[in-house]
Figure 1 (tube, one colour):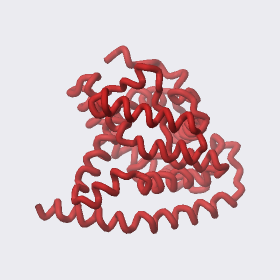
Figure 2 (spheres, one colour):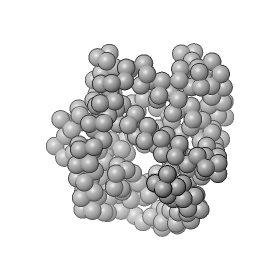
Figure 3 (cartoon, one colour):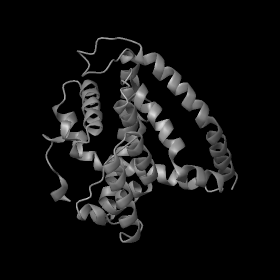
Length: 264
């Protein structure tokens, strides 16, 4: 109970700090947008902190190999694929308000209507989003976040950053993550109803689900990479460009990766 009380207290303080973090992030983002750096050798993104990024990247790889990857493999081994898909569908459904907000901010009316339709159909007919009924009817899921919204508004990446335990990103996209948190009604509702522990459950489930989904893709990339750090950096930039362009299934870099879906 003492530990739970500490968690709740931390979440309440985090709710107060998130707006401050947002202002700081945008200040740094604005400054970084003014910087001009040669990106010809880094896959189209400036990497002025490469030495530090590589050190953090090595730390993350070790943590992944020791903790996250084994958990993801265990999750795949224990949980059948239909159930894993259901978890992924439900997590996507919970993000609907954030997706809708970003579609509207990007001026994508059709995308906004798709989000509303998917949320209604999957929530009512798809058992709270466990089944992607809308997807079966041709209304595909589109990942949207405020980092993409900033890109649509013409904001550049800013410097490439590898954060501890968070993976690759940029000043723009990390700032977007802060805004997405502020935009999420579920975050505020749980934070204001003494149910902050469910935020931890959702975040942990999202991390494990995403890592399981990428088990084969990352393994394939690692096997073929001369410099895995540089490969992941390039993949990150291409992936973000594909998402901004609303390309399907990250076509920018996954098109040459074998499809492992039928093996499980």
